[in-house]
Length: 488
Image (tube, rainbow, N blue to C red):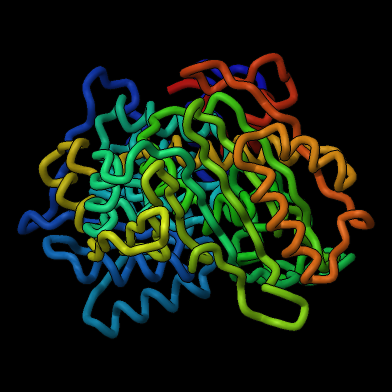
């Protein structure tokens, strides 16, 4: 990717194909001091929700339960869902503006903050634009589509002194806060391994060979934004973008980011791992998806390891249920010298001794949007339960795992086994995956696995050691004019 100077960036990132005038907030980018955050009438925080389908609708409902906030605008490139959400709020007596292009939201002086639930490939640029326009941001997970994007988001939040919350809502769970503090205090001895599990059924997305029509009510140019804009070669535009590399990150970065974040939180690590490795495949069907439905990821933190497992197939070819490990299908298991802790959901955890006897349980949820709004009012980043830096690091662990996978070569079961045996605690995990695939009538002696390289990273840096291909995947080429800058 070529380097852009500041003037070039402003030109390319702010001028859309349909834009006739520069947004008024561009002038703020030349200011030497951060933009003050205006608060609306009656001290309410005026919020726009961007991206309105499933998770975006959740944002709307969560904001409606919060005090001192008004939803004043909605934005989506799909005018069908946009009109539907506007009508739903109208029925509640709430009148909002509606926008198709998020740049118009950022240009609106009556919007103080944005709550963003777009596809992954829009998270970074949308957040950066919002920060530059003086808006605070709640951005869904993963916060970025690649590692470089996440770092630029952190820089934008700091430079423009914006309050940016990551949508890893488990960080606001009182039960998990207490559980993590308890285990980090040494009550089960030293932590050895954090296991993240994402055993979630993912069926085929279908297999089409011809370009599919884009509905007239969707602005496909804006939907693609920073990503390429090829013909649609899958049955469904919405949601199934998760399983295509240009827009999604697979289940590791979809559901799995929650468990990756909790696992890293428990380990108490604040940087990327010193080594990362991944292997897996898309087994059981042939479709238009690209991301693996079965994946192993290893992150080396020296005396501690973070091991992640993705399974999209059921327990067996005759049983539609999902596997579990110590009763956990989607959650985290923390293994310590004196026992282990299981986190089977978003709000609870239970500690056991090495004989499986329960020692202590933790329960209690929290309101992640309310935590963000409180920080917006008091302007204290430290009050956020999941500041953008936390979201960046956890998202980047997903990205670096996927980089190893995507650089992988088709390998035999024996070749995969050799690598598994060379990595601490991975042989056992590999054996369980082998048995799982066999139960689904998949023979790894016949169906090959993508075996990724073990990638070393410079300590304290977001850079691979001696691997130009891996480092190139820390960013991407962007489609004019939707360019994530190389620097803030």
